[in-house]
Image (cartoon, rainbow, N blue to C red; front, side, top):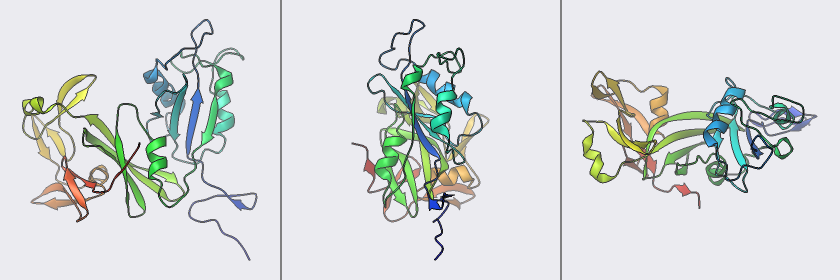
Length: 268
């Protein structure tokens, strides 16, 4: 009897293996004198460095997890399988053979670099997805929508847009970007249909989905584009009176012009 791999699992040496699209890379950084930098002080430089290392290969901006034991952990979601990242991670450095400098000048302790594939197995992957795709400064909940998953913003945050990413193993995720909402007293400072969110510690009025900027006005979009369908997920995008709206299903609730599952999983 011939065995066939399920879904998009590749065959390796006659056996089925999980596609390696999602990886975590962990490392420590040091100052010019070789001293450990404590507290992971340069998160923006780390995200920028890995964005520059893989400018066309990632389906999602590098996700930086909370600092632990003075180590950075960055989650990389590739468009295609990346089976050799464990070896490749040792070769991301520039400079002398015993030095490791990332794009942008950040020095890494080479011996601390560790790359691991994220296993996506099981009937419900919400806990795994919340842990491995956690972004600093953003809180999310997870729900299953048919065969797909939705990482939504908690009620304290406002979705600024969503993107559907393919993680392999027939796992697809609608991943929302989240911005902290302004305090209630500031919400009325914005013009009609604009939303008040916090950016760089300051309130700002923005035209966010399902609206778009049209001159000085903020108007509902007239069509259900792919990004708007992802924004509405786990609900559905529909055209009502020539305007795009998110239509929620009976087991969902309307939150900030989109839909949210009534039974979300939160990261404890």
